[in-house]
Length: 349
Image 1: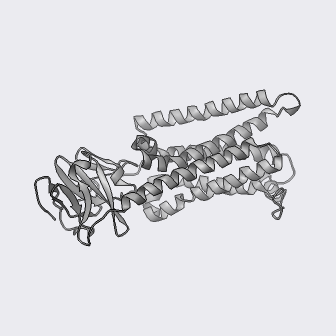
Image 2: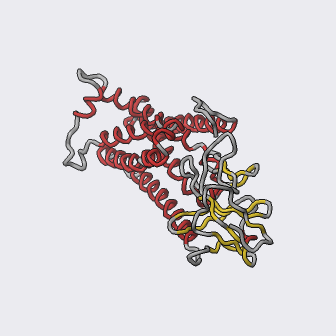
Image 3: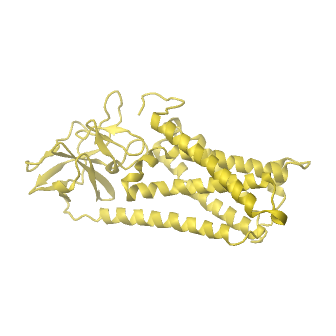
């Protein structure tokens, strides 16, 4: 968190994350290039320029798959949360690698004519009515534009000025970019007749991403099916909630995160005021609920960020009855702090 915008906010962890990501990109390109050199030897040999173009394209596609897997993996297992914290950094790197691939393609295949390379790319093939001759480059270009827009608006300045809702919808376009790239790769492989490996890997990646999202959605759906009456929702036994962690329940379509800390139980909205991150997947650090996405913090008793920050989230009345935690589906008034329920108390709120 920061009270002012900063051009760069790298911590030690972020530097290590970025260094590992850059090293991974370099290693992937080097291995791809070397293996391709060995496989495509003799009459099947391709130029170094073409191999580097293919390597950067494959690298960008693999990175996009990793990005789309991070979210559901973090929901299925908290061990992946550290990767989630810096997902935006990986997204910017993916856009840069994709741009390198696009510049290589445009320069190598369209840079030696009398017309603009970009015009050549758009006009050299207009067979939109043919599957085997479809201009698959258009799909890749459209996906690149989306990735670059997302990279350019990744800073919190845009999140604040566009509003979290608009910013979130804009960055959900990553799924549109992914669909375009699947079509780009599939149609490009069909026309180049590169064999079965590329289409198979593309379909396998699509299956993995789809399966993870379905599994994560199914788990959240099961968590939402909590029994309760119109006034109080049963969360479970107090001992079932881990210390400084939360259990999430659903009330009328809204998720509530119920935290236990130092023998007291508090309930807040599950949505972080920053990007709508899942607070229930975070933990209490230094007495504050800490969002697992980007570290925004809120006091559990009143939902307010610690000074000098001014953000606030909704709190909910909570009580402990016969050792079981219950939460009201109606938020508390924002006029004052809520009262956490103590283990030995019958009711509060």
